Length: 428
View 1: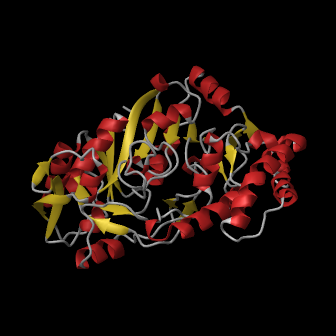
View 2 (view 1 turned 60 degrees about the vertical axis):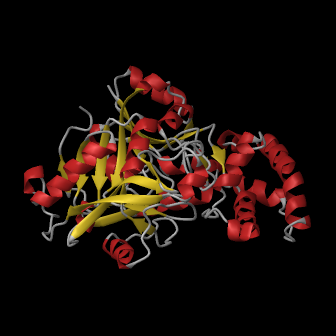
View 3 (view 1 turned 135 degrees about the vertical axis):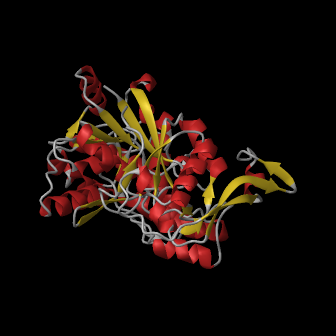
């Protein structure tokens, strides 16, 4: 049976939770393999809307085992809050499994994230301040706290004290903040032990056995391709690998386990935080997309920067991830526009670039070369087949498919679960 990856092709917020939910009833496991609670998924089920930040979207689908694997950094306060909120709305959360090797976001990670960002001033990256970067930095520096450490108080205390020995020097002597008490951190982390006990396991072994039993596994990437620490618009990126390669290291399954890679891409482009954005709009068109698409962060509430579709970026995502299928979302947001520009290449100092420039400075100075497509005025939210769409909407989809590097297999035409046009079987 297939192991399928869903990732974002742009800078996040493309609707990955929607795509995961679209396949939910056909999979057995949904795995979050990277990131933390710095990104959110909004999933609409009937009249109910769910905003998920740390939990895999599969937690909303009965019979699916949701997994937080070793590549994730876990804020235990957020985890507890989400589980309690969903449980209070009648969702069965007892199926969740959490890797013993996943790293923990502590109070000092959140504090350092915020003071570091303020210290950068105009050079700010646009972090959410939730401690994601500092937690990953500790992981790489080999001073991180893992979920399994919470079950050994002696080890936990040693690790917290060792981490704070240097961090408190930085907080007090550089940032003029008070020192953080190791006792307070240890006490806080130990308070989650009872909650964690029934859900913590060797998730790598769990997923290996699931494959041996011919179960279908869906990998759900946090963030997106252009925010990948290695392949994104560095340094304006996240702290983990949000591309297909991260699914293997972040879960413990081998690379050959992946049989399909589905990349979710909006019919236009958005970004939150700082960094280059060639097609960004600063006029009424940007305001229109923001308002019609309700482009405000699920986790942060921040208004998203909006721009037109970027075909070179789509091709880059297709190449980096080995995309087999695109899911095009929010096509309905474009209804009512007379013309729809699409970036087909960039101009960098008078030179045309048909692909994304490898030099970051060139990308910062790139200006889009547009091709314009006729728009449509019809309401497309009721379309369920390709033929139901207006001719201009059909032509727009066909044009994007030709210039994006892989086939478009599904198109979102509204926010609700059933508002989708399926062109090809995503698992076939």
